[in-house]
Image (cartoon, rainbow, N blue to C red; front, side, top):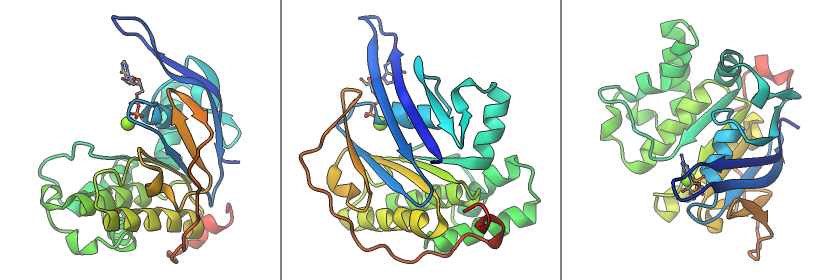
Length: 246
Ligand code: ADP
Ligand code: MG
């Protein structure tokens, strides 16, 4: 099991009293699996992903990544770990002005001290895998919502993460684009053996996920909605270097 979130509680202080955003929540996700979480706005989806990514410390409980306690690492150790292993896609995140798509995708690789040319090559490969290579040399601002989500997934993919956390990547898209994004994420799980955790406020968007969990008021509840698995399209395999740890 790659990620194990164990009995996590997270509270936010508020002037009117504390808000319990996550209330004793547990989940596990492994490589090759795509786990979906749906729930209404305010149910705690983004908080859960931030905790799982090690960006936010839980008040109680633990986040265990590949056998190591992410929540008790020093912040330097956690940042290094996250840079190498975990990638996040925050839907509708502010995109830096003035960067071309390929540069935007290459940024995490450059932060990780990779050679500029190698970073650009890897960024172009990731854009191709996400079928948005035709946008590579445009400015980020020029992209449609769907293209921007794909470019964001390419940016995450370029770092070759083992865990991909995607917060509502399909939430602002048309049904067709939503389906394309979910096919892409399911392919990453199936073919590139990434562990994918994806959220949406709508269960219908998560038909390709297994399992699908329903989060309500910071707790998992059983869902009344049946879940069907769809067809998963092939995706280029991860390079040989990572095949050994599959
Ligand atoms: P979702 O992503 O499902 O919409 P969130 O995780 O963003 O839910 O929020 C869960 C709850 O926690 C909401 O009630 C929200 O208002 C509250 N919340 C989120 N972030 C903060 C914060 N920084 N300070 C106070 N309350 C917050
Ligand atoms: Mg949210």
